[in-house]
Picture: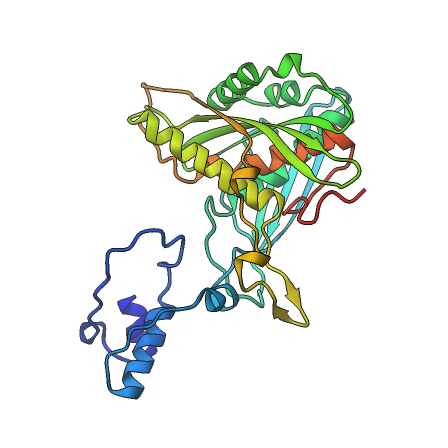
Length: 331
């Protein structure tokens, strides 16, 4: 913040003194110092100290946004359905989680920046949320295309034992092998790795054919981040990630009208409520032989593709963009 203030006011950093109050829950708002720069400009203009507090409407319409992006995936398989080529191209949303966890001999992985008309900043899990959603959706499509069980298809392409372990732990806890399909009721699975952690998520959804309402009935999330130090806190991190991820998966979005942002209050920006929270089961895989990694971000990465794959299982409708059903499932 001192460097940003120094640049904005053409001062040497030594002439800028920043006092930061203790405050949690910044959720990315501490990455840049717009509020500090605005307060300093007002103080300079008025000749008096200024206390600046942005309103919720100002934050919604002027703060930065999670980067939008377009992800293109192309793949090649042989006659047995085995992956032999993979091309993953992310335009604008970033490279986190983009590296292929599956064993594919020929790969091309690319990221490309874009000139966004909006200011952009971090989201929990960074771009891994988008990249893992795209990859796990595509893997599910390939499994169904070849008439193979989606879990089995993933497992036979995995050389990473840690990823296999969390997928198998989730499959066992969820009852994947004995799941009962019925019209409007589906199951999906997805997994990924980022920041030293491994997440696998299984989702059960119910879709109302008349209203288009999608309800996530049950979620099983398996997580491994090396040696577990505090299991209760780790479980809290995973549960919180999954619940937050449900919003981004199902309905959270910023709306635009006539070139302006029209989402300025929470009544127009729904976040998950108690009524949205499914039966949530967390499986912790403890690897005492490995150093501990962080758990604050990675568990959010697999809920969206798991839900999307479950919606396909329930309805035969494949959704490839987020949020999946901001106004219900349109048939």
